[in-house]
Length: 486
View 1 (tube, rainbow, N blue to C red):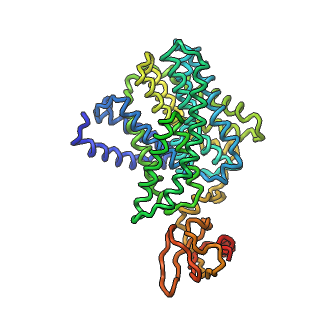
View 2: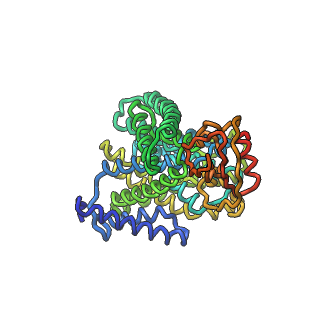
View 3: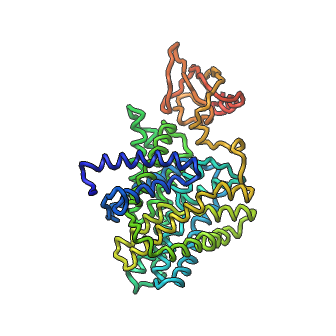
C-alpha cells in the first residue's frame, strides 16, 4: 500500500488505535509497551501484512526530531529539582563521561569483530551510547517502580540529559567518516560549542519562557499548552541555529519551567504527558515502517554480539568508571548499569549516516535497530526483577510522591479553611502564581466584597480577601500561613 493524502489519516488512526490496545495488553504480560509500537510498525510495513511502502530516512528523521522534542521536554517538566539536586553530579558524570566511555569501548569492540574502519566503529558506538529517555521514562513510570536512595531521579536525569552528548559524538564521528583527512582533535571545538551554547541557551530560554507564560494574558486556558509548545520549538531551533545543542537546551528549559510556578501548570503538564505518549507511538511506528526485516537477518550474529557486549561490558564500564569518585553501594551501581535501555533515539541517530551517504550506513542502521530491540526486550522486561534481586526496590506503598505527583494527584482535599488576607499580608497585590503555594493545597475560592471568585494562577490577591483553601492534611495549613505570611 502506498501512503497518499487520502488514506494517510485513516491508516495512521488505525495504527494508533491498534498500538494503544496492544500496549494495554503488553502491560499485563510485562512486555515493554514500546516494543509493541515498533512491532506494529514493522507488521504494517512493506514486508509485513500491511504492505505500506515507506523508505524515506529524511522524513523519519524529521518525525524523530519533532518527537524527541516533546519526549525530552515532557521528561524535563516532570523532573523535580529537589529530587535531582542530591544526585546532580552523578547524573552529569553518567550523561557525559559515561556516554563517552560507552561509545569508545563499544567502538573498539566493533572494530575488532567487523571490517569497519575505526571511525565507522566509533560512529556506531556513539549512536547507541546514550540511554533512551522514551524507554526509561515510560517503563519506570508506567510500572511505578519505587526505588531506594535516589535511584529513580538518577536514572531519569541520566536518560533525559545524555542524548545531547550522544548526538554531539554522532555528529563528530560522522564528520570524521565523511572527511577522513580531518584530525580527531578538530571535533573538540564543535563539542565544546554545542554543550556550552546548549546549556546557556536552555537556561536563558527557560527564564524567558516563564516570563512570557506568566505575563501574557490569554483568554482561553487551552491556549497555554499551545504557547509552551511554540516556546519549546523556538528554544530548540534557535539554539541549533547559533550552533548549540538543541536537545540539551530544551531539556534544561523544561527542567527550569517544571520547577517554577507558572500559570495553568497542571493543564500544561497533563497535555505534555499525553503528547509525549503520542509522539512515542508515532516515533516507534515510523521507525518500524522504515525497517526491512529481511535486511536484519544477515546481521543477527554481529548484532547479537554487539548488543551483549554493550549490555554486559560497555555499559557497566561506562557506569563504574564515571561513578568511581562517588560513594555508592555496589548494588546501586549494578542496577544503574542494567537500566541502560536503548530505544528510538539510537535509531533516529542512525538515520544521519543514511542521509550522509556513508558506505556502510545501511548495515549500521540495521545493527543499531537490532541492538535497540534487544536492549528493550532483555533489560526492559527485567527491571523489576533486578530491582528485587539487588534489593534496591521499595514496596509500592512506600513510594514517595514528587512535587509533580502532588500537583497532578486526584486525591480529594477534604479539609477546608477560610483564611483572611490583611493589609500587611505578603500576598497582597500578588498573583497566585507568584506565591509559591504548597502543592497539596489549593485556593478553591476567593470571597471579595461578598462576591465569590473562582481564581486561577493570574488572579491577584487583594487586601480584605477571604481565601477558601482546601488541603489534604491539617499541617498543610501551617505551610499556607507561612507562604502568605499571615
